[in-house]
Length: 109
Length: 246
Image 1 (cartoon, rainbow over the protein chains, first blue to last red):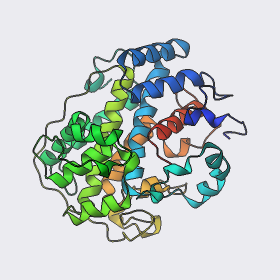
Image 2 (cartoon, rainbow over the protein chains, first blue to last red; image 1 turned 120 degrees about the vertical axis):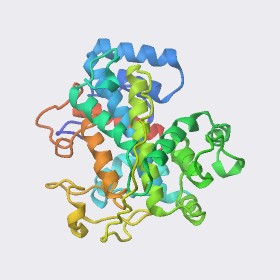
Image 3 (tube, helix red, strand yellow; image 1 turned 90 degrees about the vertical axis):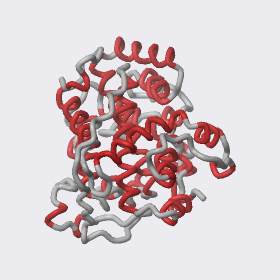
């Protein structure tokens, strides 16, 4: 929940492209997947669609966020940091709903 | 707009272009544990990892340890450093504490490890964004002469990560500005605090390529061309694709 609004977070794990309540969620998810993927034509389409639907500036900012989290994930995984206690508690319900605790670095062997 | 983005097909915010130029030039400067030439070599190896046959095979395997072999490397850095760079770049979702301990047992210090991870993260952030907007990757910076400072913060101690870290209460005068005043310190900020300059460097980039610390939870206004909700959706989808819980 952000700013007292509710969103459908199934889009986070790819269950749907539509994160209800987030404008242009499908385009944003397609763009993130294309940047991390290897299909250049798909990326070009996703880039153009986002730029046209929102703005060229949104494309730059979206690319920045995708790039930054592609890096932050590596810092987190390479150092084995756990979620903070307050985030663990606050996110328990949607972590369970999305089945993302399987990504916990502490459980890896 | 900085020289890095002089040929950009779209407008890149001035503050973002400047932050990325700062981050890029710092890669070429002497660090805390690696010199400028070694830091640029780590950046080069980070890019090279994407064409490594061993990494490709491991990425496709259920368990990366099931496939043995030697990394295709540029041949400049020791194998233990190449292993860290390639695994962090190509397969972060399978990194484990056992693997980390094996790297340290092979002779890489925890301090060198953290600085290596930070350089890989810088290159990933900058190159991934370049790919996103359709830019050529920037050429690697020229290495600058000089010796690493070899500064180890006196207050580091075991915390929640595989490496020791600095709690905000343990900062010395030399560690000022590492953490943001006025908000709690997230574990992701403490993660690289064994090498404080890398926290400063990386979070300078974070503040411009994502959001400044105090803007992350300020929902009273929007700071970017996309909203907080759109930003967090992108971040969460990327983390899920990378199989990263954090």
